[in-house]
Length: 118
Image (cartoon, rainbow, N blue to C red; front, side):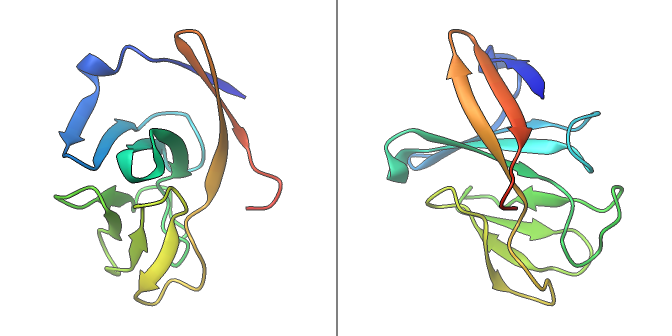
Protein backbone atom coordinates (compact mmCIF):
# COMPACT_ATOMS: atom_id res chain seq x y z
CA UNK A 1 0.00 0.00 0.00
CA UNK A 2 1.20 3.50 -0.84
CA UNK A 3 -0.16 6.86 0.29
CA UNK A 4 0.06 9.83 -2.06
CA UNK A 5 -0.85 13.37 -1.05
CA UNK A 6 -3.27 14.89 -3.57
CA UNK A 7 -1.44 18.19 -3.72
CA UNK A 8 -1.42 17.66 -7.49
CA UNK A 9 -0.50 21.23 -8.41
CA UNK A 10 3.22 20.55 -8.07
CA UNK A 11 3.08 17.19 -9.87
CA UNK A 12 0.84 17.83 -12.87
CA UNK A 13 2.60 17.39 -16.17
CA UNK A 14 -0.33 17.19 -18.57
CA UNK A 15 -3.79 18.75 -18.43
CA UNK A 16 -6.24 18.76 -21.34
CA UNK A 17 -9.98 19.26 -21.51
CA UNK A 18 -10.41 15.47 -21.11
CA UNK A 19 -7.58 14.25 -18.87
CA UNK A 20 -5.13 15.27 -16.19
CA UNK A 21 -2.05 13.11 -15.71
CA UNK A 22 0.15 13.06 -12.64
CA UNK A 23 3.29 11.01 -12.36
CA UNK A 24 5.32 9.55 -9.54
CA UNK A 25 8.50 7.84 -10.72
CA UNK A 26 9.84 6.41 -7.48
CA UNK A 27 9.50 3.34 -5.29
CA UNK A 28 5.85 2.75 -6.16
CA UNK A 29 4.88 -0.27 -8.22
CA UNK A 30 7.57 -1.94 -10.29
CA UNK A 31 8.53 0.89 -12.64
CA UNK A 32 6.81 3.82 -10.94
CA UNK A 33 3.16 4.81 -11.13
CA UNK A 34 1.22 7.39 -13.06
CA UNK A 35 -2.21 8.58 -12.01
CA UNK A 36 -4.87 9.66 -14.49
CA UNK A 37 -7.95 11.71 -13.65
CA UNK A 38 -10.19 11.20 -16.67
CA UNK A 39 -12.90 13.74 -17.33
CA UNK A 40 -14.47 11.39 -19.91
CA UNK A 41 -15.17 9.05 -16.98
CA UNK A 42 -16.48 11.91 -14.80
CA UNK A 43 -13.31 12.47 -12.81
CA UNK A 44 -12.50 8.80 -12.36
CA UNK A 45 -9.05 8.33 -10.82
CA UNK A 46 -6.93 5.50 -12.23
CA UNK A 47 -3.41 4.39 -11.39
CA UNK A 48 -1.12 2.32 -13.58
CA UNK A 49 2.30 0.79 -13.15
CA UNK A 50 4.59 2.52 -15.65
CA UNK A 51 6.36 -0.71 -16.67
CA UNK A 52 5.54 -1.90 -20.18
CA UNK A 53 4.06 -5.43 -20.07
CA UNK A 54 6.19 -6.34 -23.10
CA UNK A 55 9.55 -5.02 -21.89
CA UNK A 56 9.18 -6.03 -18.19
CA UNK A 57 12.14 -3.83 -17.26
CA UNK A 58 11.56 -1.26 -14.51
CA UNK A 59 13.83 1.21 -16.34
CA UNK A 60 11.71 1.16 -19.53
CA UNK A 61 8.52 3.04 -18.90
CA UNK A 62 5.18 3.82 -20.45
CA UNK A 63 4.36 7.54 -20.59
CA UNK A 64 1.11 9.34 -21.46
CA UNK A 65 1.12 10.94 -24.89
CA UNK A 66 0.58 14.64 -25.59
CA UNK A 67 -3.23 14.47 -25.35
CA UNK A 68 -3.38 12.21 -22.28
CA UNK A 69 -5.76 9.74 -23.90
CA UNK A 70 -3.18 7.01 -24.40
CA UNK A 71 0.20 5.94 -23.04
CA UNK A 72 3.13 4.73 -25.13
CA UNK A 73 6.13 2.56 -24.25
CA UNK A 74 9.34 4.47 -24.80
CA UNK A 75 11.05 1.42 -26.36
CA UNK A 76 8.63 -0.97 -28.10
CA UNK A 77 6.03 1.76 -28.83
CA UNK A 78 3.10 -0.32 -27.57
CA UNK A 79 0.12 1.99 -27.03
CA UNK A 80 -2.54 1.77 -24.29
CA UNK A 81 -5.92 3.51 -24.02
CA UNK A 82 -6.33 5.78 -20.98
CA UNK A 83 -9.57 7.52 -21.99
CA UNK A 84 -11.80 5.49 -19.63
CA UNK A 85 -9.19 4.60 -17.02
CA UNK A 86 -8.68 1.02 -18.19
CA UNK A 87 -5.19 0.95 -19.73
CA UNK A 88 -6.28 -1.41 -22.52
CA UNK A 89 -3.71 -2.33 -25.16
CA UNK A 90 -4.40 -0.60 -28.49
CA UNK A 91 -1.40 -1.65 -30.59
CA UNK A 92 2.16 -2.91 -30.44
CA UNK A 93 3.87 -6.07 -29.21
CA UNK A 94 2.66 -5.84 -25.59
CA UNK A 95 0.74 -9.06 -24.82
CA UNK A 96 -1.59 -7.50 -22.27
CA UNK A 97 -3.04 -4.29 -20.83
CA UNK A 98 -1.23 -1.97 -18.44
CA UNK A 99 -1.20 -3.18 -14.86
CA UNK A 100 -3.89 -1.23 -13.03
CA UNK A 101 -3.60 -0.47 -9.36
CA UNK A 102 -6.48 0.09 -6.96
CA UNK A 103 -7.10 3.70 -5.95
CA UNK A 104 -9.14 4.97 -3.02
CA UNK A 105 -9.42 8.62 -2.08
CA UNK A 106 -9.54 9.58 1.59
CA UNK A 107 -9.41 13.31 2.19
CA UNK A 108 -6.17 14.66 0.73
CA UNK A 109 -4.71 11.16 0.28
CA UNK A 110 -4.86 8.59 -2.47
CA UNK A 111 -4.37 5.05 -1.22
CA UNK A 112 -2.76 2.92 -3.94
CA UNK A 113 -2.78 -0.86 -3.57
CA UNK A 114 -1.93 -3.80 -5.83
CA UNK A 115 -4.85 -5.09 -7.88
CA UNK A 116 -5.71 -8.75 -7.46
CA UNK A 117 -6.95 -9.06 -11.03
CA UNK A 118 -4.02 -7.28 -12.76
